[in-house]
Length: 416
Image (cartoon, rainbow, N blue to C red; front, side, top):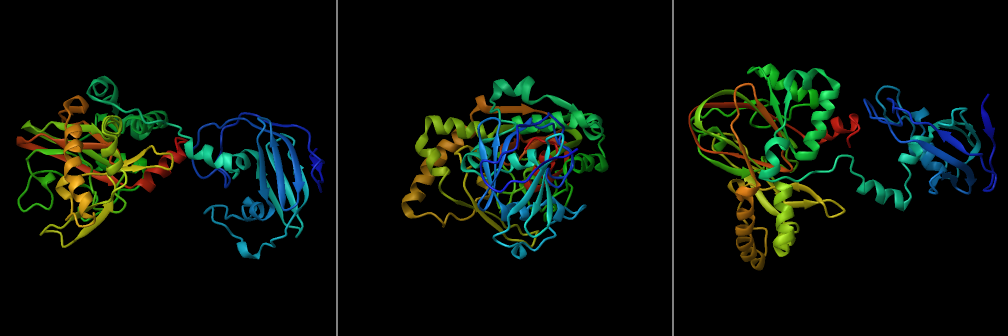
């Protein structure tokens, strides 16, 4: 039998309500897809106040939800399959109020009858997760489920370069989640056992999201050729860099599957951009301040593409808490430096020497030679990649996946 309480003023409270530990399910209030188990929800009291509802939680926190906000987010008015809002928000009376609250016997949900006789059911777990009190907003901005672990050469070998089996990644959910956790932590993910065929290169992307198509195509290869639109299609050395700096939203992921390797040289070269930033921040704070506050132009303008890409970005992009969010730099793709004032131009060339020196510091670099059947996935917003020059046959198939697609995957896995 339902536990019913009609509340009209603060002071008329519900008894303590406990919500047990439960695995999150697919719902309009939890998002779509697979999620990890979430923490216990404990609601101590509910109050109706002027303009909304207040909830006192067992940890001492209180949440106030405006009635119009609750009505606007009523899961009863979201499309059952698309998840889109089906109510015209401006049609909700600004003075709408709760007439009755009913808590489910298990203590997980609360039903609300509104003053306009409409009805809503909310998960208490969802309400706490979406509390918009100042302290909860700050807490969410600082919440990181998988913290980046910066690395140098000493940590790269045996830790970062752990290999995951291709077939298990594609077919086993546990392996997939473990691999994506590793990618979030270290910014690079190594594979073994990949058949050297395009459909298997694509299968890894399909497991994560949707391939990002650019003027390079969807899936490309790096076999040297004449009249190239990028030096990736040569055999010369490429210093560590991030890709597509000339896109406003540069791809988050870049994958390389080795389908041919009969070359001398051609070792892949990885550097953790967050380690570069960390070292410069500690040893050269004035350089870090410069590259985290000045916007640099990047472009792609080859003779073969018929495109002229141009984007601007900081080398060190920080989040609201001052932590590294994105590393963006490729000196080969830097556009005419016409966006900085004269005094900053002089500083750029002075400080670039520091950035270049730290980037090429051998104590930060990891080297390895891809073999047929092996591959590497790099987080292009963090890990720089390059290669040594080579002689002979070497070919890697690859693709990009965008940041939105990556983050969607991570949310579905409960990692973001």
